[in-house]
Length: 337
Image (cartoon, rainbow, N blue to C red; front, side):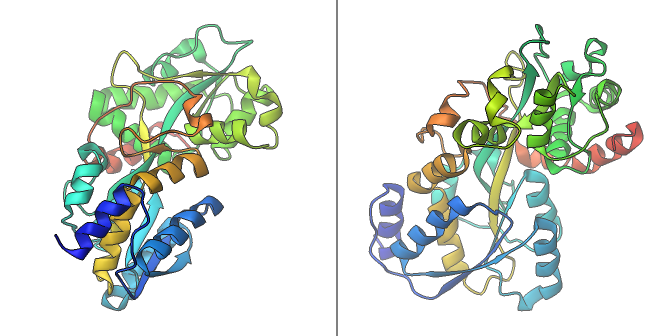
């Protein structure tokens, strides 16, 4: 067994691994969470590899990598949501990775069909509601388009990647016609024009602007764990509905990464992705940023576990990603701002 294999095994068992590598890893990161610092420092300590970070918005980093071309120093791109990962793939700025560790650890539906990107943490897209005003919340995503909820729904704009991937998953699961009907129905049911981020949708319930809101799970869990202005003090008034539990299950957004097409430190880049799939790193994603691990069986943080058990949609996200262009067309056709 090689030194590299021994070290990877040690990482997966969450034990301290001897330093065996040297050099650097140039990480282009669109994740802006202070809690990720522990991910980076532990990787450096366990491998002897120094991480150089360049942070920015996902689209800006992708455009930079494309412009840099073969001279790009980027080794790894890490970002949020399937749509951005697929966009990076289509721009030609990622490369395929052959890793037994990643194939074993990351479920097949959470990785690109060409192994150019892999999901390392998940966020569920959940339906929230005002407990006092809503006695029969939407049970499925499709129910959000029911005329019974006219004037009650708050949801982000069509430019939001979470909504783009959600609509793409509806296309994949239910077909284009059902997806168009859904998008039009949600527009008809909106309590206000789309505005703000996911936390603002939850705040809309607190303020009384909305009776129903759609948000990713970790925004709500964060409101339980820390003091989020305009949310935490009144969070008990908000109910949670896991969507589509008798159908496909709750839609899961990814935070994921891929090796850059022209990575100068390719071996270190692959090692970093394999580290992100370790139990240790997976626990950090949950404890540090209220996310669900991608690897099955990893312990959840208290706040994430408090959201309850649920059925997740196991649709192939690589197939969902291919529906994104149609999703954007539908959003435009129905006038979803």
